[in-house]
Image 1 (cartoon, one colour):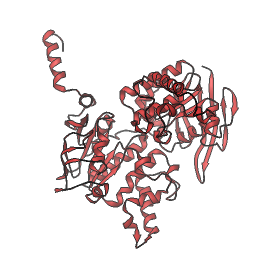
Image 2: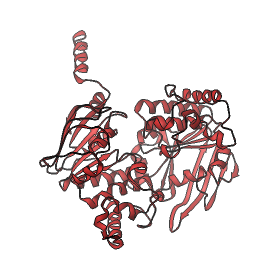
Image 3: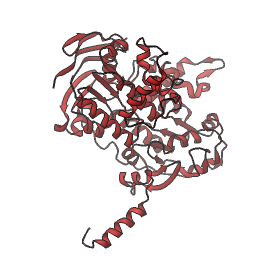
Image 4: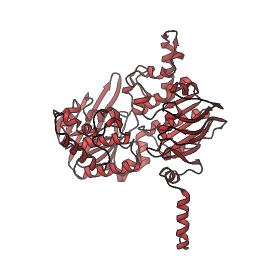
Length: 517
């Protein structure tokens, strides 16, 4: 393959923090190259340098053998480099139509909004057709789209230009299995046409399915580059962490007490329909379902962030009316939302400010904040959760996704809540940060807290949960103990199937062919 890209000896510092010391990456024409590393390893900084968001302090970038300067996203796009970021809402203009969002770079590059509406819509439809997503109306306002649809719009935006390199930064995070399969077929088509694709994902199964080579980074340096078909997951994980990782999902026994939460007949008039379940003290209950099953809607309804909720909610044996998140907090609940940057954090504020926000009264004296107490709590959180940061005054925007998620979780510790709701807590988080989050959740359960773990990552839910509730179309369709739960059974119920139907079909087959096993 022809060498398309070479990033050599890339260095980048932010104040006293070294993000990259010796970053290296090569990409061949038509190659799908996975870039992996734990949060804070430097891969996001590498990608932002390649896409023109940051300028490197040292090193060089060669594109098709020529040294290039990429000092802005516009310059990167002029060289044919496009990036599809994980945080979709930061790149979507909600008030514009789908077609206008897909053609947005054309307008920014000197095009006119007076261009033919018909032509704009035609180009947008063609891009969506390549993604097998013709069902998304190009005249619809982008702000009304689901996360999965917004991600597809961003990918379509890259496809309307003759890109040489497309960077996919956690592109499947908000997508269903079917949508991910569609995306992979698009990436393979792009690869066959000579486009170089850089693929970033924390899902190793995806990496092995789609990539040709894998580069692993650690502490701002390239550790190694592997040929995918000649490597295995254990080898990759060891390179990412510096040591082999095992037993991260092994069960730890802890005592379970009385009901902390009892929900009966919960409905929101839209997605949720007659949801009933309970959570005991010291119990981790997994709420598992595919994208669109209603997990996030259930979390928000419990936390008072949904309208017109019907049903009864009891916390610690008392019926509780929760019409607002403030009611939920007073009832002893804490929600770590799915969209941490949009709903869970003030990313442009300091770590200290974010840490103290849920319980300002605890850190204030009259009209004044007790900065010492506030700072001590933030430092304690950094230590307990192993947060990689330059200090308590670091703005969260400079932290990696995994470290941001730790702050989103840790800030609720000041309230000492009874019940913790984790909505997709490992979304966009590397395997090292996942281990830290699992440890934290188990520690909360071990201290008698109740934990609800909402996730579409079935294997993770099986590993962390004492009990699993499967959701489909806004309802809980099956309850499984940890011993009963398998990925196959959960996926069956989550996709609307019934085990009895499968058993009946197997029985009929055996009757037709008594010899079959």
